[in-house]
Amino acid sequence: GLDGSLYYRFISSSFQVGAHSFRDSGRSKSQKVELPSRNPDAIVEQLVPKMQAHVYRLSGDYNPLHIDGTSSMVVDGGLDEPILHGLCTLGHAARAVLSTFAGNEPQRFRALQARFANPVKGGCTLVTRCWMPEGMG
Image (cartoon, rainbow, N blue to C red; front, side, top):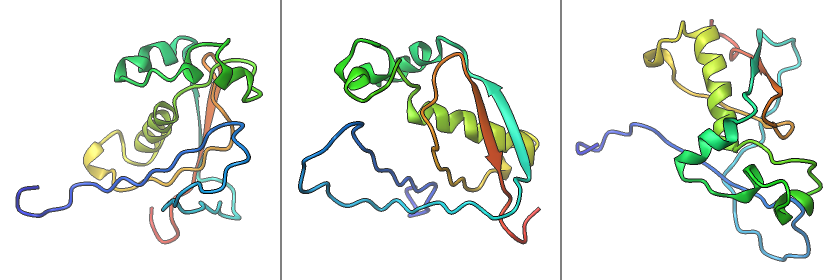
């Protein structure tokens, strides 16, 4: 803010599916998310609409990986169809956490760590496994 207050901190990195034979990939500030050894505190299943990537495309991300099954990013990446935008997937996961642990009250939402285990495709059921940090809840 204008007074120097920090409102949010966003750390991101990316990768190219199927990329190889490069020497310098730069630096990432991402951290590995270790899953707790206990069972999840909640498991939330959400149906991802088949056309979700088309709607999310309105955000300005026109990467063909998310829309065009004939794109080299899909074909050369070894995918059988386009996959959902990572940020859209994160939005679904954040919604699952917010509804499960914070009563859908955004002011109670403080932080989220995520680990994408598999590509998400339109029309599938997205399963979000949630753990509360030790000592919370």
